[in-house]
Each structure stands twice: as C-alpha cells, then as structure tokens.
Length: 170
Image (cartoon, rainbow, N blue to C red; front, side, top):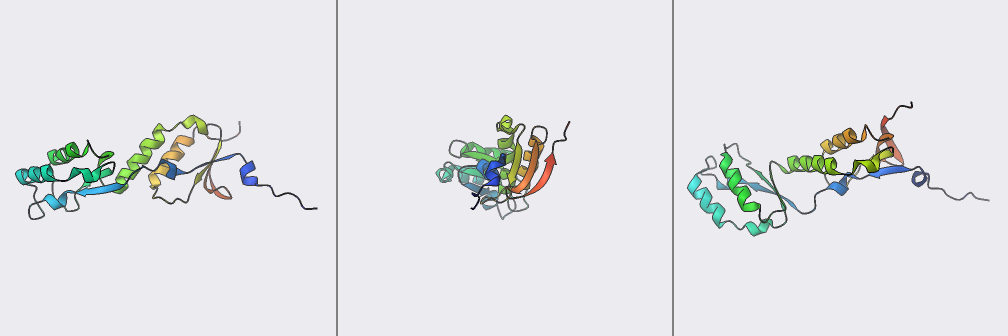
C-alpha cells in the first residue's frame, strides 16, 4: 500500500515573502534633461522654460517619472523643480535619480510601511527569484525589519533555502 503524498513545504508553516508584490504599479520612465541643454552643456533659462511649457506632459499620465541628466552638465536646482511642477499633476510619482535609485527608495519605503506584525514569530522565506527587478537593498531592508521579530529567516525557495537567521532558544 502506497503512502499518500504529503506536501511537506505546505505543512511546514513557512511564510514566503515575495518582494515583487511590493513592486510599483505603472510604468517607470526616465526624463532626461540632456535634450534641453544648449550645445549639450548648458541649460539656458528662457529656452528651457519655453520648452517645458510646450512639452506634452500627458504622455507621463500615471507613470513613475525619474528625473536625471545623462550628460555631465551642471543643472540648476530650479530646473528640477520646474520639471517636477509640470509632472506632479499627471505623473503617479516624480523622483530625482535613476530608475535603479527609484526602485531602491520605493522598496525601502514600501517595506517600512508594511504591516510587520504579520511576520512576528514566523518562520520566513524571502523568495529569491522574481520576474521583476528587485534591488539588493530591498533584501537588506527586509532582513533588517524581520531580524527582531521573526523566528527564522531564510532565502530562496521553500524547497531549497539558505538560512540567514534563527532566533536563539531561551
């Protein structure tokens, strides 16, 4: 007589956290100020203001917009502020920096705001593979959050994990 198959992973009581569930909704785009520089080097106020006024801002509707300059030009602070003022009514969010920096900040904020008590006293597996780009900073931040409250922290897949932390027995 054959024994019934038992899913030991499901019966283990492990909680799997998939960081990609915290990934921002909506497209992430980069707004490059290099296209508005005179001779690729200098931002001139009057032409820049005219270009910003004439720009089609609706193309950023509900998108996360990262502001930057891909050339080594010095951009005055007011220029970033002006672009932000135009984007704020239409964009989902406006961020100064690269897409990678945006995702790093997004994850740190999202994890900070998450309900941490749902993980208290639990055996946690932080899923390693994802279909979306997850910055390493997100794994570091989640470990920092979980360390004081979780029973144990593991990384990988529930069937094959790397132990990270186990609360000492008292």
